[in-house]
Structure formats: C-alpha cells, structure tokens
Amino acid sequence: MKETKWSKNVILVDADYVDKVAFDLIVNFERMIGRQIPQADMAQWLECVALDGGLRAGGNEVQVVLLHDKKQMENFKPGKFEELDGKAFSGQLGEFLISCIKVEEMVTMDDLFIDSMQIIANAAEVSRLVVVPDAEHIYNKVRAGLKDADPDKHITILSMQPMQGGQFRQEILGYSLMAALGIHSEEINCK
Image (cartoon, rainbow, N blue to C red; front, side, top):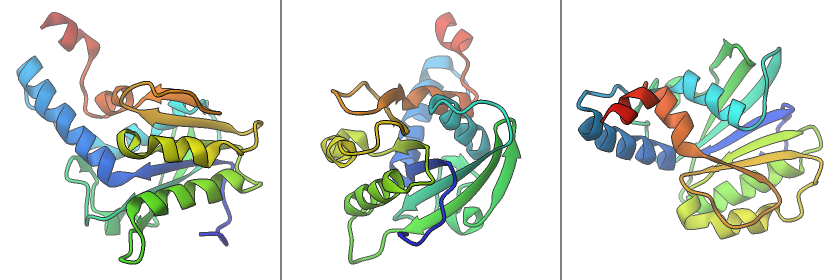
C-alpha cells in the first residue's frame, strides 16, 4: 500500500463494520416505517460519503479503499468484494475507483485500518481523506493516528455518533446510509 499512487480524494472504509451498521438500520427502520428496505446502493452511498467529506460536483477522481475480512457485504448492492475490486463508476462528483483489500491472517482489521489510514493521510498527493472506521471500538486509535496529519488536509471521520476531539471534521454515518437505503425523512416523521 505504501507504493500506491493515490488520488487527491480518498475514502477509506471498514467494510465489515459498515455492512453491520446497514443491517442494524434495515432491521430497525423496517419495523419503524412498516415496509421492506432494500440493500444499500453502493454507488449512492459512496457519493453521499464523498459529499459528507466536502467534495463538490465536478470531474473529481475518488479512490475508494474497502478493507474487509468477509467475502461480501450482505446489505449492499453490489456487495461481493471480488466483483467490486478494480471497478469504477462515474457520478455527479466524478469517477470513483474501488479497491478491496482483504485482511490477512498476520494482521488484525484494526491494525490494517490504522496503518492504511496513516499511509493515506501522509501521502503528499492526497488532499481529502474520508475515514469510515469501526469508531465505537477504535476511535482513540484513529484520533491518535491522525494527530500529526497535515493540518491543510481535509480529513473527515464518519461515525454513528459524535466523538470527542480530534484534528478532523466529523459527520454522522447514518445519514449517508439512510440515503443509500432509500429511507426518507418524511417516512420517519410520519410514524
């Protein structure tokens, strides 16, 4: 990963964690709003994440790195990592290039995530980084790992609830997932 040529804009995701959060949202909102909720639209979710990270419409290139231990994301479409790896799509924000990296036996997801985050944050060519960690478990490591990041870099952490301090912006992960799952605020407000 150290030899990788990075785009100006990078999204780093703990894909197993995001899939679990999507499952929890599906189960809870199906009960709340009384309808079946489809799998999350991967492309729509990634565009929402990029928007949360401050990216605006245009001819941007966004590199997406999905770290995973499982074979697929059960609650996203498409969700199979071997189908997603090396693929790209174009949207209103630009082109999204997807790479999937499986956690190997010699390293934990937490260590791989933190190491990857630091490599990307320290890459000279990266100016915008959006990080989607399992914040409930490794937030302190994320915060410590970014404490020496270049203050001119635009770094955003997405988590399910606001977390304490850090040299970065924070956004709520649930909003982008709800959009990708097709859940609208009117449905929630009516119940």
